[in-house]
Image (tube, rainbow, N blue to C red):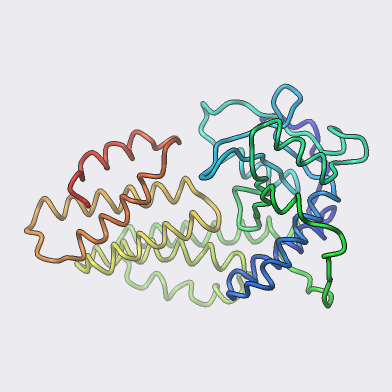
Length: 310
């Protein structure tokens, strides 16, 4: 993907990302009123600030989503690069353009609605490949008005809004996770304890991504120790965590791995525990909704091998 505009940074769209962070926090805390308010702020900020948008032939592009077409937008070039890295090499090529380039004065609420109508889309996915992402639906853009914006107290400076802090955190976390993955593969039972002291320094977003990774690795360790039920549970829900907080493709890989292990266990030993059928059913229900992607063939093969899962 070649970028026609890469000058945006998280600092350029701090108001937008702060609104996304507020929605993220409200969602974790189960605060429905706070979540709705934050989603209104996201919609307002999206219409009021320049963002990068995926384009094809000079027009905004649209990709299929779980409930209709989705237009892709990014708060900065780093977020766009994360999305590009997650795509299959054979995916249709896209470029980036700033909304200020596509429309004089930037994209307004009415222009976003016009783009959605022309594309047959019903939502805008902001930063779709990372944890600081949000989805703005057509109804939210249509009904949101500036008078609804009620800002509270000033929010704290979040470390994930700074590019340098993000790069430093990613590099540190990457090194630790590589060490941990190798230790788990070698059956080192002390691996978790060796890095426990490092976890306290991970920022809030990073800690959620770490939790997903550690849950998958812990599941593999449990399996190696003979605890199949607990191990597969952790692998499945660790994979769900990746899907929610950062990498849907890694999520699919984890679910396929867990499904293969479930089928292997079912075929090699009498199925005397209901949990195996329950795990396989839930896992396959999720995979059945994975219609396309670079692991589509593997998904199809796994589902074909588990016809009696229901």
